[in-house]
Amino acid sequence: MSNKKRTTTYIGVTNNLERRILEHKCGFGSKFTSKYKLVDLMYYEVNGDIEFAITREKKLKNWHRDWKWNLIKEDNPILDNLAADWFTKEDIAEFKNIPNLYD
Image (tube, rainbow, N blue to C red; front, side, top):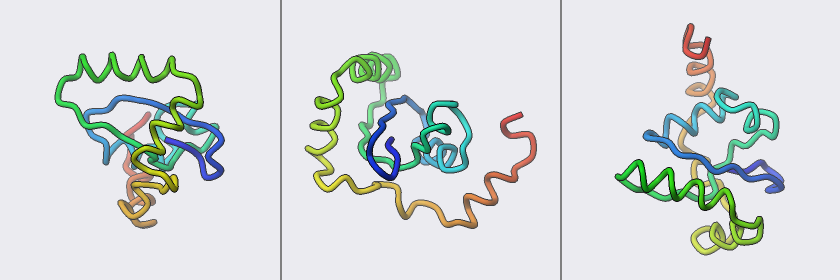
């Protein structure tokens, strides 16, 4: 995940990428992602083994900034938001208003 200016990145693990992206877009979840407005999906890997995914996440989090950007640019050279068209403004507004979801 990154912000609009591509100055900050976030790496995480989820069992539901679509839901997690929607949470980011609504400002739910980590204080870090909310603070830096990390709502653009730049890169993702699909893996069915949660233990491997967690190990991979930890490894990537320890990488130097340039290494992370090089990995992203291998698959996404122009740094598009891969989830740009996943949700409408109405989808986001509706999700934000689900009662008690994040209380």
